[in-house]
Amino acid sequence: MNTLMHHWLKRLEESRKPAYLVIPDLIEEDVASGRLRPRDRLPGLRDLAGTLRLNYTTVARAYAEARKRGLLDARAGSGTFVRGRTPSLPLTAGSSVEMSMNMPPEPPELAARLRESTAKLMLSADPYRLLRYQDFGGTAADRAAGRNWLRQRVPDCEDDRTLVCPGIHSVLVALVSQLARPGETICLDSLAYPGIKAIASQLGVRLQALPRDDEGPLPHALEALCKAETPRALYCNPTLQNPSTLTLSVQRREALADVALRYSVPIIEDDAYAMLPQDAPMSLASLAPELTYYVTGMSKSFGAGLRVAYLCAPTVRQTQRIAGALRATTVMPNPYTMLLATQWINDGTATDMLRAIRAEAHARQEIAAQVLADWQYEAHPDGFHLWLPIPTQCSWSASELALQLRNQGIGAVAGAAFSTDGNPPNAIRLCIGGPQNRDDCRDGLQRVADTLEDPHHLHMPMM
Image (cartoon, rainbow, N blue to C red):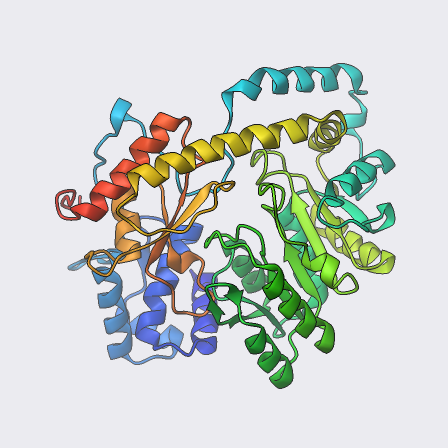
């Protein structure tokens, strides 16, 4: 709890939002990230006020707001607790539907192909090789496969600037640690992947949100920040952004790259979903190659367990520096998954899987369009998540809706988990790749639509 309070204190100091609104946002974020769990006991009002250097009234208002959002329970004589789950109403077949984790669907027609390729790999590989330390960054064959994969988005990528890494998240840890020191600033969209928030918090790096419009982060806001306080890096998730599903246009990419080039601001291009769209604009790495660290991976395209990522750094020297940081934190990529990814790229399995996953994503997006026809939401036909703003006529806040859906067996994530400016949108992210099949996908989306349409009939008393 001491670590959590330190995190809260830091965020309160950085935020321009009133403290009584920041605290409920922090509770919501920490529940979404797992730092707080249902039935965790929170400090009393006076204790929390002392720890956070706030007055009693402000903390009382914050807890009241958190209770209003459905985040807390207060029990006379016992204290204040993170709200637990209510009894679930079963879905069809009595199962729950996972829509909180953004993962690709699993086309059943590929199962036999994957079993075959896995068996082939195990038969042909030296089993002891899989138990040995590996060359960090991959063997020559692994780097060559990674280079070929990256060249779909970064045409001039070379082997000596390519690293094979144990997942995108580990690359982001290394990049943030190398580009910014504690107290320094990295700027990013006002909506962002929660992992980058957790990484920055852990490393003591300050995140500065850039205001956005319908096309993404505003270039003039980036320039204004550069004039006032040159940031150590710009973090960007430009293709099928998590959570908004937005893909930055060529014009917006050019404008952001132009500012970064003029002020020598390194770019972290987290292109986790880059291979999903059949037509994506050119990468920031192509527009600003001397500044951009481009990273993409396999887990968001093929499956969360395939923790393999490919990094293309601006220069050979910078590649070596990042390799050192990665070696210190992760030792090496998993030998088996690295071999599997290399084989899939070389024998065409990866391309065939992408084609099948796109087809399945299209089918599920069509289901979403049917079930959510009465609601405005953002999506991309090649993607597998939705961004659903809560209409003003609904009585739900995003956190209340996400909690209520969770109590009905539907996983969803409220906008506060993605907010970097302390002003989270009243929206939820729904991931349609998580359900096991299309029927489950339809059931889950129908429950969301029913809850939005008639939010009172599903309310149940707390246990």
